[in-house]
Image (cartoon, rainbow over all chains, first blue to last red; front, side, top):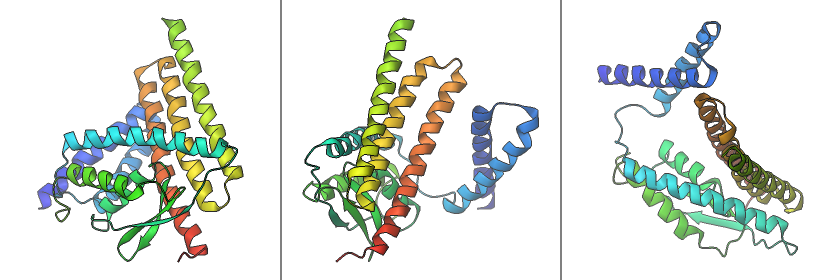
Length: 163
Length: 97
């Protein structure tokens, strides 16, 4: 267990430091700051997402990324259309979505992903369900959310009860 | 080739600016905090994505490409996180049925 933890810490630390080097460049005077940033990022990552969880499925993750891209374009176009329309077509309201993902990082990831969906914005948790604020409550919001959640569950490696 | 890339940059960055403008119009016209958050998070996310996409062909080094994409991803992550937190506070101040 301890070796798994150490190996994950080393791999993540190296990844974060490598990413920092890519962004800032290998200037010797900056390296100390980079090491501190990488250490802080590793500590946070190990705390929020301990090693040994489910395996990521990359095919499902790629499909999720593709859908995320399409949805962010549709979301931006949708809100721009409403903002610039003379009639200002809004029917705002709340939709309660009974989320299948367990509370924690997976559920938070779902909230962040779905905040780009056209017309929806996660606005809190209500008795285990996610509460979404919608620009237009007549849109099929829950159907879209269910498709996203299914993709995320598959990307995280299987059924909803092993994350 | 360089002309084609320049035209691509101009079109993509202009489209990005258009979405920033639309987001700002939404911020001014939408009726309350929650609807305004929609305008900011979604339109600006797409606007910044298009600006970054337009600037990619102008990058001098491969590192600049990675930097530009990282900036977009960080802004996306920050927008998605902060947008949700602000929505929670706004909802608490105006309880729903």
